[in-house]
Image 1 (cartoon, helix red, strand yellow):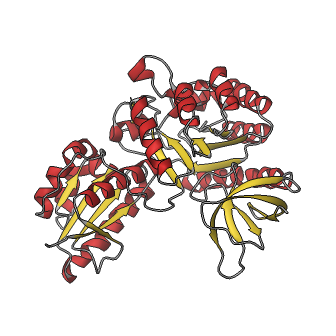
Image 2 (cartoon, helix red, strand yellow):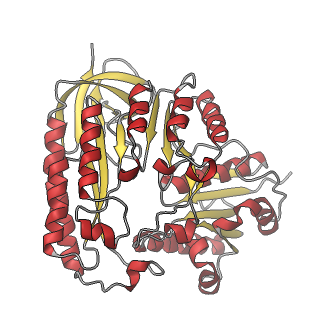
Length: 436
């Protein structure tokens, strides 16, 4: 029997990766083989990001690269994801090489669409079968909600993903149990706004209850929450995290700016004082919490004084990890209509100044780790140096926060936890040796 070979490419964020892994599960359930080479593939499916200009450019370039292989035997090219959701009519005209653009809103009908385009039967509901973890079998993202209700003035996510919709709590727990039974040791909870989990479905915030249920799963080792909004980190959530055995004191809190006027212009809830108060509460509640954030430099109308406010809050809070984005206009967002008054070179200068300040803070915080013993999740071994490379509770996946490199006289498989004595700092990475 003919088995079609499908190449699958996933672009963008972890939420997109979850969609891709559900797709891979659907393909596997229907006997379709996933391959990693254009030359092997009968068809290619690209899951795209369409959030910001650089992501859109990457998606278009990837589509054009794949389309070239149609001259070498590639039969079908399918594009799904955020770019398709946002620009489908336009893309259908401008990229006739693509056989089908699938919008996110069409995912409930994905089996029927794939059957029609690929010419092979694809049955079973999308998202209802075992995910195929595409990278590290010891780590998985779990999407607890989709969409967003926050309507930040610069952000296109609500236009792409729609309103905030929480998953059923039991459904999340069931997926987590299944993943842990397959050897997953680290669960990373994701949503556009994880702190709002449950409010739409249950009429109240349910993140604390969800964490307690996940914490009780036999075999889970780390649970990490990503994307908490500063105005929705109540004291009871902090208490829950402190009481849970496996929930890490890692707080990813995207504040975007340190100026109250800029926050209002961005349509962000809360203010500078609230951000400071919540961060101080977290510092006081845990022995060594990790605080991460993102900032925007050069938002329309940002004055030099407001940039300095952004910089001063960064220095006052002492974030462990920080990312800064130079503002880019996104059509169909409220901020698109504002005059982009900060020149591009000035946006870059402000971004770089923020990052330089953060680099000094991060280095000092890393130096303070020297002499401590950290539990490290081993991810790989450097073939040249023989050193193991992994992450502690301080490091989110995908190398966004750096890593820990350590020496050991014993072999360690990927996915194992090892206690490591930290002996030095190299750039934004820690170095050490296995504790004797």
